[in-house]
Length: 498
Image 1 (cartoon, rainbow, N blue to C red):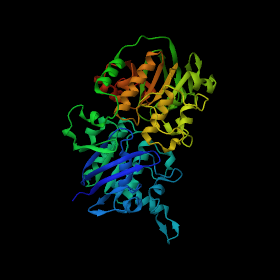
Image 2: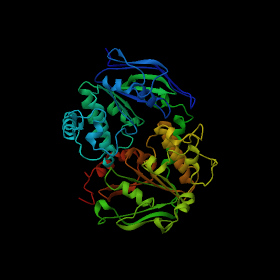
Image 3: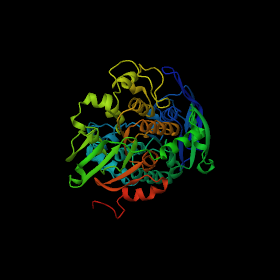
Image 4: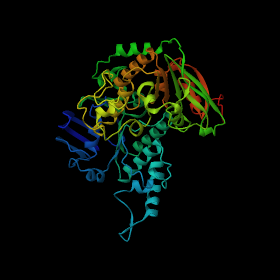
């Protein structure tokens, strides 16, 4: 008997006119890792939320070991062994990790007082059994993205999770953190748990999944073993847009062209990062009509470089210049309205006002309530512009930020992990838009934790390791991936800092 059977699930959102799930049926056995893939808006998150009891379907049913569950009853789902690791965290930011994991099932003394020691001990035992190394006494808000994912998994396991649903679990993780997460997922599957893994990153699927389920426009269009998909078939099954294989190939060729180098637009002059205590200096220039990719794993200075280049923080030494002037000396409104585009790695914290309308988020830099024409056709949000940004799915929030920042030519584009959260067609469209802005004269600084993204978008590449530049050179294509990985992880003999 399958551990999970979802039968004929249908969900229509009247407020947006979206049929998110249309007769979706799926069964999952213990020990399986099933990848659920599809474009933004394909219905993946709605399916996950229905199975986890967060959303009641209009019709259809969910069974665990042959027992039907009440729709929209998250407590019953959790007690039945279903755990959800959401795209947007459920953890309580102000609590200790152990307390947040135990929230709703707190240990108490005399039935009245919280027993924090017991909660820590029980959670530590659970973490040890799952092979998760985590400081349970830290506040949730202090956790790195990778540790937050591990804490979410522990929370799901604390409810005796026999079925774990992971919604875009690697969206904020670098390659090394993703690999560690994959090891954990495999261990959990080997212990007999069933895993539903929702992802946009096609490279992840072969590494982690045993089966792939494809959703398109709310319908299930494929359900096969990983090896049963022909080369190039998966993107075609997922795509509902006008981006075709031929168009993607043309985009790749455009990106691979060597563009004529123009004047220096942005530059790092003797920049000292805190991770190296300012003792190792970072110098580079970004010119017109080029994309410089700076790639690093988390904790190696990429996040600090982003804040400095955006003019949000001061370096320990040196300065970041834009048009020959310290970026912090530019009037903020002038900088953001006409000179520099900024796609932050923290889309929601730095890039969006979630309680404001979609339209207001799009036009905030223009000083006008009217929608500025010319937003990218695939990346651009659709529907009622009066809706709050918080009503958008995670993927469409990414598109909202990208649409605003890439809407028109600028002198400088600071793009941090711009492909994060996009589906296959969105990534292809984004690549074309970035190439167009570069052709128009834009200087693009790409900050990325992904080798794949860097090789797809950059003309030149810099590798940061422990706050130092350990490699710099031209992008020669996918064959460089192993060499870049060696520099990223510090295995190369060319390390500039031990």
